[in-house]
Image (cartoon, rainbow, N blue to C red):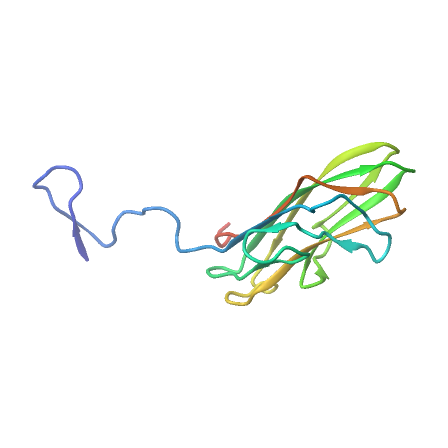
Length: 168
């Protein structure tokens, strides 16, 4: 038990721990932006987003992260997609090491002719998927019902961060 002076100059009170000063421990984080050039979204089996900038790692399809505290990851972002052709359905899936996370972490958007949209990305993982100390690659898989929709670099980004353990 330590002595911590709080308040008056000569007053002393004993507290078991110092005051809380911020976050509990370090948390891993990485982000990516891009692609470098617009690219056409492929039909089945789809294509992974090729990021032009990855904060920690090389440009490419993988956004690596190594959880250091909890193993809980929150994956957020957005994709800017335009459809110059016939109506198409675009599916966005979050993947860990090439394996898609299950639905609810999937977005399906129907695009009309000459329509542009921003598709949000949101997913969360547990230590079962992302163990502490084990590096994992996060990818985004795009699939279109027709060849035509195009992913644009503007407003396309991905943010992967480790978060505190849910307490309920």
